[in-house]
Length: 132
Picture (tube, rainbow, N blue to C red):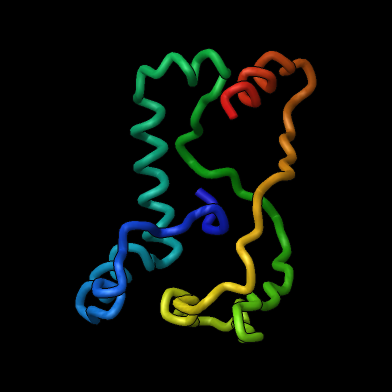
């Protein structure tokens, strides 16, 4: 799941102020890349073993190993929070959980989507869009 589309719910202010609770939560969610990859591979393995007809209908398959890509890293920029607070995102070791516990500048809506699909997969595309 993309972190940009994730937002933690169910944590009230008392829990946020409890150091031990937040420490335990950070240990569960802040993983090193190799640990996160292991968790993802375990999830993919579970999904690939599922007998879900939706996967078959959409033609979804799961590879055991992640695809390796050559890539470049773009500058991450800043988050602009409320009260003109800016948080640099490309600083190693930055604790975003702590720094983002502030008022957001705005919560953008996700009204505009782009879906890329292979030629000849119109039915799969239409089924996918129909589920939104």
